[in-house]
Length: 146
Image (cartoon, rainbow, N blue to C red; front, top):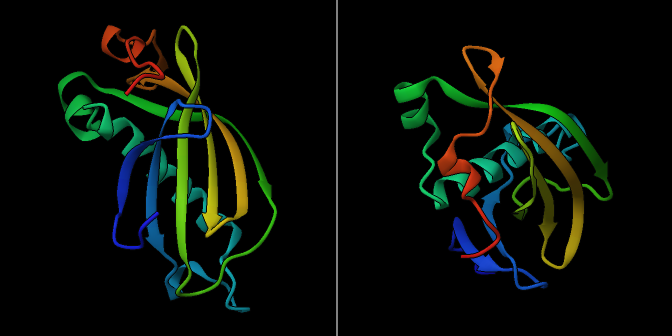
């Protein structure tokens, strides 16, 4: 991937579409050792999911203001394999793994070049006014196709 591209929808190894978000590690992302603080990776993953949705026409702020629909993380499984440091160029890869009645499961990873730093699986539930709700029809139409 090019260092100049911030987000792109591309085909993954298995042919399914993935969103690839490029980002730079800044001082604010690191801890006293100069390595990326573990909580910063959660923000990177959130940005990846946001761009995945945006690529499909789901602008969260617009949908929330029109219907109060939002996604909340219900469950997160993460494996930290390697660390990143200030000024590294990272890519957050996001794909849809599964759709359920009121939630979606994302598969995500963070890479520095060919090295996988972090892998995660995120279950995000649809809520309206803080209560779980069925996925709206336009979200149920999300598929693995481009």
